[in-house]
Amino acid sequence: MFPGWISLRVQDPKAVSEWYVEHLGLVVFGGRKDIGSVALGTGDHGAAIILLPGDPLEHPERLQMHFHVPDVDAEYERLKREGVKFDEAPNDKPWGWRHAYTHDPVGHTVELCSPLPQAGFKQ
Image 1 (cartoon, rainbow, N blue to C red):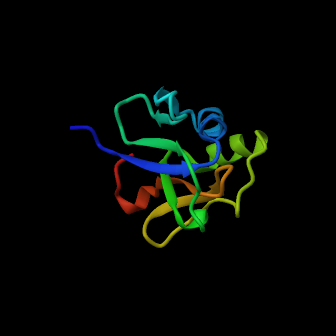
Image 2 (image 1 turned 90 degrees about the vertical axis):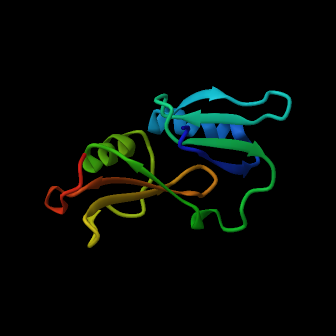
């Protein structure tokens, strides 16, 4: 079974997809040239993001996408070197995960997260 996808309307799907490819390592695996959509994913048949041309969300920051990474602090430092701005430094959350928050080029919230060892979640 395919895990599914989220479809987002943005003014420039190609430009937004380039941010995800450059900074988060997602891969473009499809899309429709006739309408200008782009399909992105991790390359392992996991969940996907479909970027469609159109009017964006009125409050894009309310959409939160969580990306599970092995080491939030290492990803935070790498992305900062690449010029990605973060809301704050990574920090531990009471629900047992470490998070760092940023935004994609159109304002969607992008969260990098890793489970804390003491929380008992598997990496």
